[in-house]
Image (cartoon, rainbow, N blue to C red; front, side, top):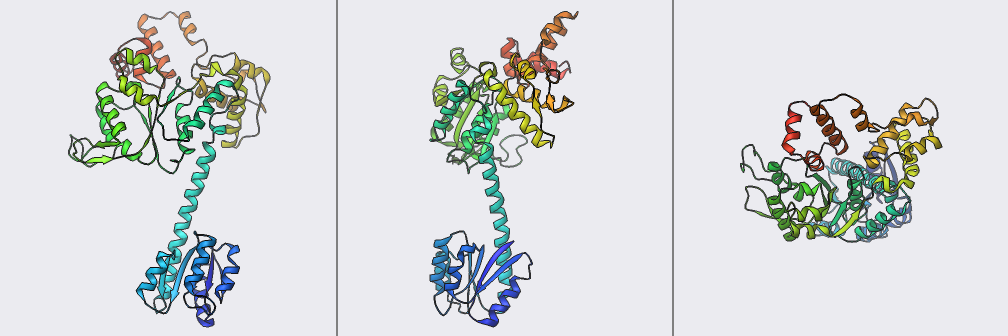
Length: 445
């Protein structure tokens, strides 16, 4: 529904306009014959005002000024019998949405303009609602739940991060919520209206990573059938989140360092220099300083990325938060799936507290959601709490396995733990990544 004011002093023309606008039954129409009446009723919050330029008590320009002063978001359509271009230009510069001359085409033009405004308002409302939803969703209290000293330190660093555009480096094990922290910083900063572009550096083949990050020109390589805008360019005015940065090839590291320092890039196969201004947030589950000492990571890029470091604690170091997190995940799951209210028993919470959670918060959430499904009543009991990885390696030792079978299970176990990140698993197990890729290709994993 749109609330529309019609301001017109000529009675017959006023009835005509009212009839035209009310052809859409969703329009709520209010009619006024003077500028003063219109201004005195602005508290009713019209969406649109159709305003006659010549009124007995005030000029259209004066009334427009009052409307824009009261609420600049009110759309004002000026109607006039004169066709003076300079007057129309002046009114448009002062905030009028459109200027329509009174002639045989007024009816059609007015309906088209009002329909365009209503459609635009719907888009604006949806965008505003989405931004409000994002603001709520990424409020710190909703994203990182907990009251432990360790998590309070994280909150404190996040509060500092949102005040400037400093590069943020997030460290933590898999499943501790690194991307959630990055999104929370973005959506609570002055860049919240810009895009948030996430890139998992380990998930993109090294030969494609440069094109993904910087884009490419048409014909720059086989298969480049059109220009492609890269992730850095797409994040302009917003935030680019580079996850698993320790997995980058050393040659690419030099190019990223230049892009970040110069705030410009060249697409693959192109000569045009593109200016960019994204905020950079990076994350890794490795110790970057150790990677530098091993020669796997450039020292200059390490210091460039360092910025404001945030260390996310593993769940085993914030076990006092497990009851709070558990109740939060239960509430979320019940609400999303329209289930009856569920509680968790003290015994079930004790079982959770005794577990080491190698998958951190991500694993806790999965365990709780499964518990919500498994329970047969209004309470989640200890038997509803099922750990997929509990005693798994010990169970293998009880079986008579070949060395090859044991190797296969061990690699599969680590792939599950580290989100199928081959490079991380290869480093953890000290084996070649080609070994893992070969086993995947042979359907051994």
